[in-house]
Image 1 (cartoon, one colour):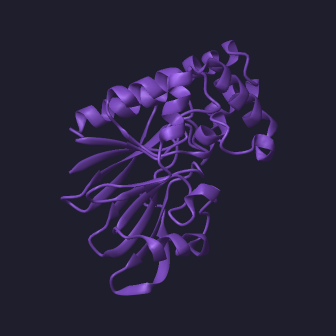
Image 2 (tube, one colour):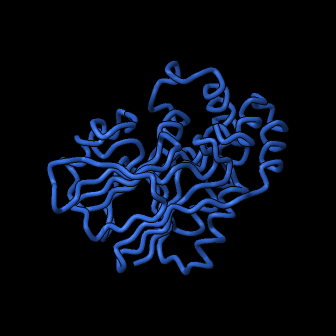
Length: 244
């Protein structure tokens, strides 16, 4: 099975369409989203519609949960709070119900999917070190789990030859044949934060036991204008050009 894995989309339609175009060229068989479909960006309704049209597998991110009132936005920064309130105002009751119904974790034939962590996914913790990854790796029931949340691509893994040690790699091409378990952060489609403004997503080929983290340019100015036109904070537009 060839999976197309979408990192945090955050209402960025132009970036999403570029990722989907690559998936089509690569003959991806199933599209998967690690959540945060909405938040920050100016096209939440369009992004939801595209995922639903494609029958994508989607888990719930913290911004998705914030828009449905499931988590308290007091812990969000001012820009994120403004974006949540605006997104709530433009989504329909039916779209909010769709976000609310998303699972925190899902298991497919060859991999699991969560937003921040596989371990205690409802807390929306960040995995930023091997120590952070250990509880999730300990509990994983499938050998591969895809996550996002940090907006920075990285793979944390345990090799078959040394299954008690957690290592990491930022290599965009990951051969999983020697790993016992792998936790793959695919970065962010709509708001990368690794100082590379190109959209980030992944292709996972379970037959070849390989993950490829891809980057592609998209029309950032279109999305920046969309954000400004919505009356959202201008910093949310400006950061797209910098990848931060």
